[in-house]
Length: 409
Image 1: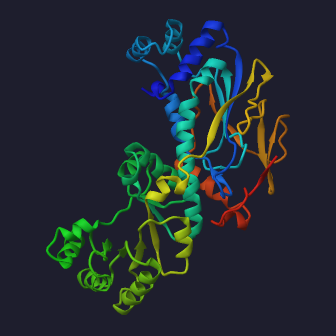
Image 2 (image 1 turned 90 degrees about the vertical axis):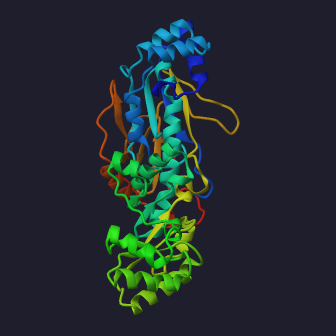
Image 3 (image 1 turned 120 degrees about the horizontal axis):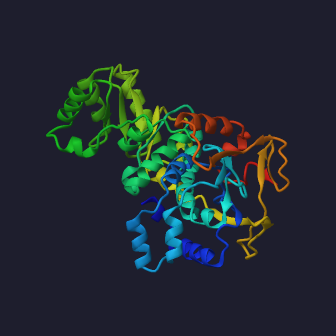
């Protein structure tokens, strides 16, 4: 069903191109963002590995084509074309997953027949817009958290499949683990979790709930201590699990104040190694505000899976060259620059060039050449992201609003 993950108008155009003979004309399409979300200093490319896996399975079977014909979405000639569709003749170059992008960065370039590149548009934008939005938000949270690990726990705040993709994107951008078991199984991301207030409420007393969890999970578990009264919850947790209790979780109140009180109480009870995990509507701004509190890790849900207020990266997919002729959209506010571009980065700027010359670190790599090339592992993608993020000037890592960290010319 991968082929049907597209908009009808793509096949409307393809049908017309096939009728007028233009479908096989050599063409170049580029995916880029005209601007970053307001105040953001950089974006993070994410989802490329997922996109390549989907492209590898991009097909239309007979039942799907019969449906498209019956609804008038395609012509018989278009049905024949789609029945034989594959990636032969297609070359795709892209920014490495985990790479940073800025306004006008050509994050993905498709070379091939006009019709072939056309039908990939919706899938490319769907994957890259979602995953890059999540990764861009997650990177800011990761920077704010510093050495303190982050748990992605937003599965209940988004579509069930988007939750898996979001967990992957957050891991790319520096999160340490996810609560989503499907993401852990599919991508090898470490998983983590505690317990809900409902678990405590299901027992006659908080002590019974803690005893049940410790019996099942061992003293290294994390106990949720704010279902009732926090101080008593902490005392009960240490009484049940002993001073070697793994961690407590705080999910309400003024987290700065509560974390300081919790640390002092844990230390007084001899639980010197018991860690403090905090949750509750965290984002990069809240995490920054909590930087001096005695917190060991953060759990982030809604704000990371929704891009922290920017649920799309704003990527567009535009035809920039056909039959060797540069083409460009001129619409006010939506203009694009024609011609195939290359991009490289120096310490102070990103250069997007029409002449093909490279005078710095090249940003695009070939990911499809008649077939999908083997992608890097997720940990390699993550390592690349952390390395390139470390190249940014210090002010670019602040969560306050500001201009793009690098000038693109």
